Image (cartoon, rainbow, N blue to C red; front, side, top):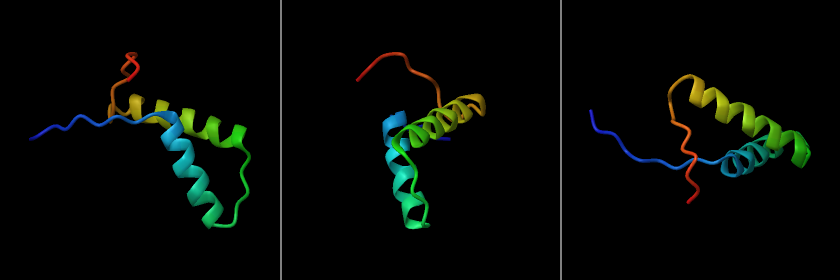
Length: 57
């Protein structure tokens, strides 16, 4: 199995969620989308899909 280094941050997740929620007719606020992104990021860590890297790029 080959592994790739992928960098995912909550801002990227927030933008993705906002775009797709808006396409589906929802009008989320910035604060709500950022909270959802944080929750989703934590979920990915809990499921060991990603590792939390404290180092900023």
